Image (tube, rainbow, N blue to C red):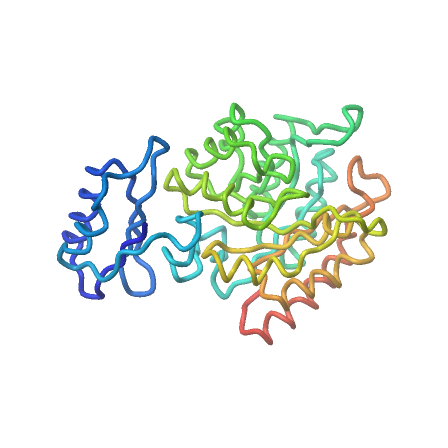
Length: 341
């Protein structure tokens, strides 16, 4: 359930509600948003609260409403937090009027490749550097990433270009290790419903970029986000990266609908990955424009100085000059929509 408070409610009154919720056997999360406090009461996985809790809470001083959750994903819902969540990442405020641009290679392949790309995307206007040190691949014989050596190169690139680093983590055991290097933990499409990994990412308190699974519904993605939020980690972004359909002329089908639909249901910032959703560099800029026009809070783009030599996803990677042109175009759309880029 979600308990909202009168605009002049005291923090001591909020704390009284929290204590009553916890005495009843539920977990309580409190947030201040849109000028008022709210408390979400959720199960700890061990059953339901004792009967009559709603009536007891409604009678406490400062309480405005007590409502059953409108969506099963309580912590991610706008019923709990009406305003879009925001947090700092480098020089931008994710989820604010700022439009977040994350760019870099699919995989970290070498020092020269990564540094060249990092400096190029920084100059073009990127706010964060992406790069995979661990790569989940369809074939076990494909390049799997450089591992710790790749993480060390990402740290060096951050020092040289000043951009925060976004990189994928694949197992819950690796979360503390990868978190020492990364500014944002990315959970890829294949791992969207890996509950031990989601729990570990939440416990880390690091910002998380959660990608939609290739066959996942919007509701399933928000349930996955709920795992992370349930640890009190609210620095979460969800990412539409295309879903699997019968269409074979693109890698995936971009679900532009997902951007406004998620934003209507959830306070979490929504990003679009036009690289994976199209699978072809020729279409990336067009779909990036569409995503920004649909209201996406950011983009994550694959960029490689020599895509024809890339060890993974070269066909969908933009050359640096094409990325610079993409930035120029989406800036115009963002400005028209009242956003900064």
